[in-house]
Image (cartoon, rainbow, N blue to C red; front, side, top):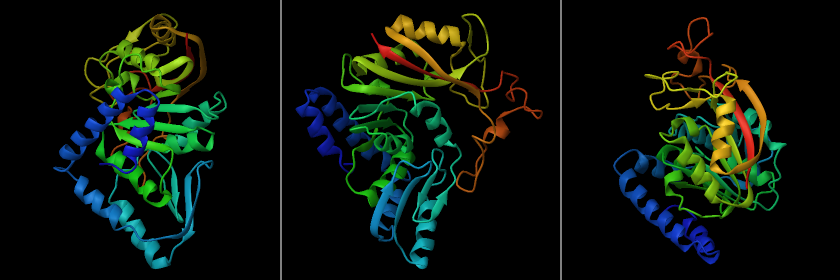
Length: 321
């Protein structure tokens, strides 16, 4: 079973969430069984083979999640080779003992757009679709008491375990799962994050309802999602792909997004940022060598490659009524 999960589940059980704790426990068992047939054994061995580092310190408040410590040049080179086994690195950046991992996304830019609008001090936080947990480390630096990230992809869970390997026990967790694993009326979190998830859901309303019910009364949702620039209540439903993504279902206008949130029971809806994603924020790097945003746009970069509007993202903060 994954590192630290039993301690977390015991905490959840003591807080009255025994049913969800058992769901997460079963999900972790299924994950370990299924992942054993892919690259998970290779990644697990790579984590075991990571070189030792003395006097490790962590700084999660910097744009790059930073670990420092005493490491020889030889071990630093070996560490670089081990970290390359976890390619592609999409969310970040990280600086691990002098090795700069320049990830596909400048996730620190996205974090900067929302951080000043939240008070995470002593908060219990949920991050659905968390990827490798980059934001979870930043949330701890912002004062969060505990962060539970859910993501279904083994690679991202493995990348988080690389950081855990050196940090040891922490209050930032990444567990296998999605919003579908959230029970109704959970009411366990002060803040819930859904960043880059809504447009991948076949039912955006169900997703928003699950996020609402994960929150305690008065809790806050941080929602970041694709929108279309349209003054009315409109929704783009791509006939095929959007920016080469197959699983994009609904891209609402900002007016429609606010209606979604209101109908689901959110109040005090505040749009804190709207911006077009650029090839400076999402791009191919040494640590993510596959196609990236520049490959998903038209040659003149005025539309997506399919002719849809450019990827524009809105960040919204709303409260559970």
